[in-house]
Image (cartoon, rainbow, N blue to C red; front, side, top):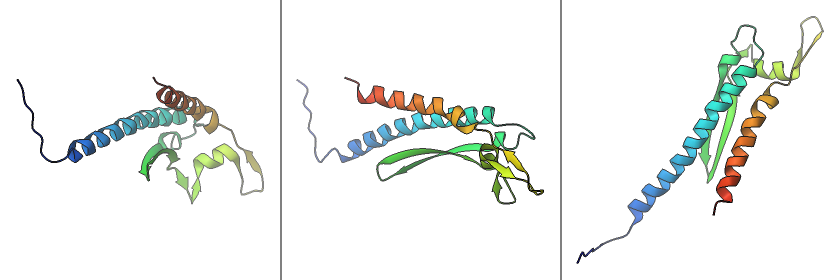
Amino acid sequence: MIRFRQKGDFSKITGFLERAKESVRLGDLDKYGKEGVAALSSATPVDSGATASSWYYKIQNEKGSVTIGFYNSNVNDGVPIAIILQYGHGTRTGGWVQGRDYINPAIQPLFDKIAESAWREVTKT
């Protein structure tokens, strides 16, 4: 016969398992973050390539909520270049350069993939 005697509580193992569960979810978001950066980079209009290569993501875990955000660090004289490519901008001579919607079509398939994955997880039996 095998006997097992336990003294105390399971708080350390419970904490470890909760952290492990969290890291798996963050790992999934890390995968999606890399996919999003690749999609945005390939869809960004290219002149010098600086804007296309300046995409990055951040995962934030606060108050029981995990979010992923996509950002572009190419800023010229305080102007975020990715945004003016998306929405357009005025010129010094009073003209207007029309924007091109490249962000939404690039990132929407990834958002759909994340939503589908979350739905599968929620409806798992």
